[in-house]
Length: 183
Ligand code: ACO
Image 1 (cartoon, rainbow, N blue to C red):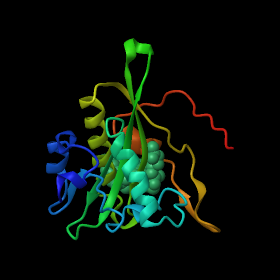
Image 2: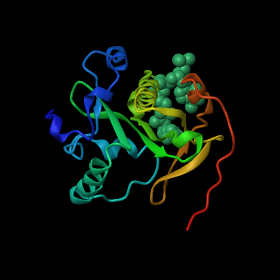
Image 3: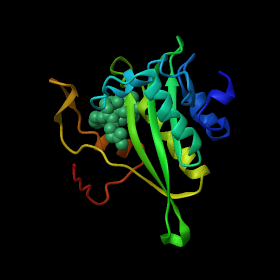
Image 4: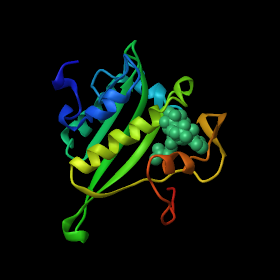
């Protein structure tokens, strides 16, 4: 895949995580071609995606590319070059902690047929590597505490599993409480 089509430099891709993947699986930054490689389908295990056109995908991709010192989206592909895992780390620039950087992990998804093969763990390890390499003093995330019904398409529901134990296995510890306000 041509490097100019990738969201950010492959220098931030962990060689250890790449080595730990099953044969034929690849870890790389999101690419401008990934509309065709199943990126949005993988995200559909998380929530409603909407009917996103290629133009909308590219508009968002181009924004991220202009801010590719802050947004790092990675994907894992299977041997047929289909995306089966994805995740993002957003690097926030603070005044506190001596103008410190905080990494926020978002939108972790593994295709339903590929779950349970340590690919979620590899996505998190790859994002932690980027957080450490870009100088974050901590990396945080929000996740579900309870099994709950999740609307994945209008009127279609699936179960979102309690995934605190997954993040504990990825080296995170429980801290603080998320609050939300919807407009
Ligand atoms: N509850 C308890 N343990 C779990 C769970 C769970 N829900 N999910 C995984 N684990 C354990 C596994 O058993 C494994 O344990 P082991 O090392 O003892 O064998 C370890 O965590 C690693 O699991 P993986 O195989 O890497 O997990 P997987 O590839 O299935 O990915 C993920 C986990 C990302 C949660 C996946 O199931 C998924 O996409 N779920 C739907 C979307 C979702 O909930 N995403 C996270 C939202 S939160 C966020 O984005 C910040």
